Length: 453
Image 1 (cartoon, rainbow, N blue to C red):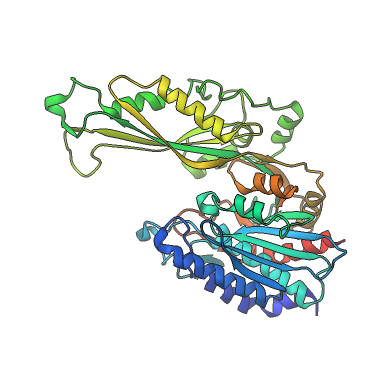
Image 2: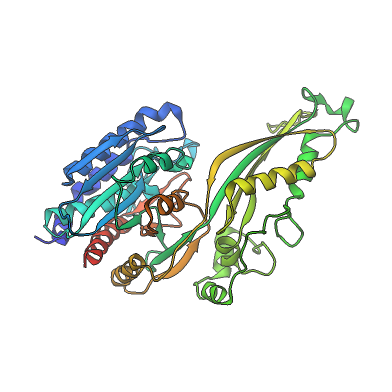
């Protein structure tokens, strides 16, 4: 029996198991869900064992546990390590979901549930592909799997775990399953991600909220100061005004800029889809260059004062904001946080105090060569699976662990996943296409076969 036949015969059972996995609310950001996170890890470890992996278990970290599995029957053959995560984003605003987020629902060829696309569907696709290869005696290399439970909170415990388990995780190639394709008909080969750093800050004025009629015009309003301070972070041409922000940024080479121009992009269609009249960003750069090849600074939240119905005439005592910076190669996350903090201190309006908190440790950018043997194999598989060659891109988002995997294990992780951009990850009604689920199982089986050659 071939691995293809095995997948066909077990299609219904595999879908049912996928839905069982999705029903576990493994939300890493919410302490109240810690038992559910543990339950998801135990479920997944048991499923790897059922798939035929010789070893499978739940291993402790300083935070949520990791699932580790291995099937290494060939001492003289190469070893591939698959990376993924089983934790999911919170599912707030239940009124915006068309069905309960942890009651997986089939709608028009889609599985709707939190974590369906990001990334329980991807993890299951790899696991089931491996199971089919093992069951059909078609797996001709060694496999390891590292599935963490903290990716959605920036993987704080994973670097230390990897460092402590370098021998256990030793391999010849790494597959990063936390990735996707360009569309249902067009494959994508990701060659890198931007890094990230984050902070949040408060502007503190009077000791308590004040009546705006009595005190307005006589002291600094923290909201006015916040608007002024946030506005100072960018120049009129869209570039970041923080001193030193671009010091380590290499100019985009003519070759790279030509590569960017080859990426399919229908600007009018994207504007219509987003309900916009025009795009905006750093002057002198095209859209893909701005969103994947250049560093950025974005305000992710800004609040303070009264925001309920009706009016309330107050001068608020505090105002708040959250910032993230997306980084390119050579930019150090800690240094970038320090530069932004220095800018806030230097441009602080009179009459308020500044309090800054670093939100997360941050991550370096990751880039790899299109000629990497893993990329070559992935490119061939995707071209065969979709009937057209993949579009090669770098992602504007961040997968913090990629640079860590390269640093600690010595290999560039090859991104190979099947989520699509429109599948509402991190939003209500997240879904994963059944067609992507099937393509994912086939794609991983084909890739592992190609790598074994």
